[in-house]
Image (cartoon, rainbow, N blue to C red):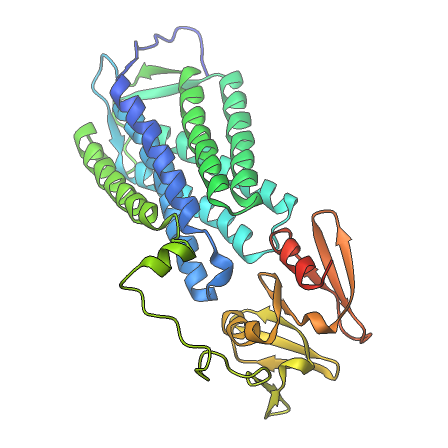
Length: 378
């Protein structure tokens, strides 16, 4: 906080590096949000890996954006950075963003969940900024209460908006709009914070860890930016999936199997589900199954006779039962439409109920609502 008698340093900024920092924020946002696309179709292990990569892209992008902009700061004194605090600020951003993504991809995605995840990422941006600023050596940042409050409001508000847009519907258009909001959030937080920040000279080093110069920091930022742009190019190539028409025209694509091929059209009811009960493996016919629920790496199979444990993951169960007419109502549920007795609409979600009184209702998420209603003939 400012106090009387302080002599503030004159600060100027390099316009090129400011522009580069904004570009890095946008690129990191696109990469992280695209890496976490369509995770409900993946196994739990692959989902965790994708979430970790997305957290590194988003958190690393926050860190890179901040320090690229900081490299553009010019002051009349020589100043350095504490390497340990600078590294801690990067890890802090990655961990907080990772926690928010875990909440989004391993819990039911509701408006409250989206808001909490967005607020967490906003707090992660704030934490990264102020911890990173604490690493300055031979000068010290001086903040104003109003500047801190405005920065916090901007961070949380813009990040909530970014996650509502990007995760409201997981379309390419929404991901691009979410990218703009995320990049705007990271950039606005930094520059709003810097506009309310002054600097004063400090006569001696206050080392917590090794001291590094702007040149050393630049090497670290260049490396992290190189990794982010590499991931951006990789995700950009695969962002727009080829349509069925383009695949048909692809001369390299293998010809489709003939309808007469038994392997391409297995008879209905052939994909029986292995379930364990009292130490015995029972093969349950799909028509007897009301719904399947994900349980970690495994699944629970519900029939009119009871609940069974199944060693198949939800992705493998979907592969087997999709041909039997089952429909996915939620990332954790597969339902047999023939067994649904009542469908209840709840605003932009729904619930499937069954005739058997012991069977619990199954939720229908917003992203699957249209497909479920179509299958049920509604």
